[in-house]
Length: 195
Image 1 (spheres, rainbow, N blue to C red):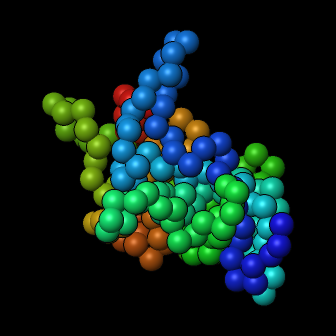
Image 2: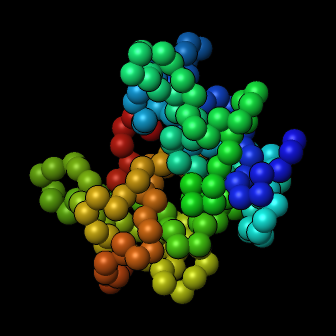
């Protein structure tokens, strides 16, 4: 694999799209459209590092990336195309600002400037829904801005959804954390039924 001076070269961990779910011994198809970004895989393996600068990443790290890297689309003539990140043979260029978290020694670490937050359940006892713009920090970048286990609030439209293992988490930029709440310890995580 040749190196790109300014970009990682990555490969989807499994497939470009995550649009099936195993139910018993059958595969259930969740989506058949290439346009829906929610079903594009965000899991990748680093195959080569950029040559021009150092990163905290290593070759063969598992990373979580932006969905548009693997996404396919239809051009104005209706012809299906690869994203502009496509390199060759199931490999893609990925710039550092498109990587949000990496796995090292079985532990997830957020890239500098990011954290991952688990939404909490609303305190309204009559409704089973998510408390808006509030959650518990699960993964951080190791800075002192937020710590794992803290209850935080974040600005509207700053959350970007990821499925990490069996949890639905929001990727939040650290500068979008708007408040730290006192953590009572009674907050319940909000886990949606489709997970």
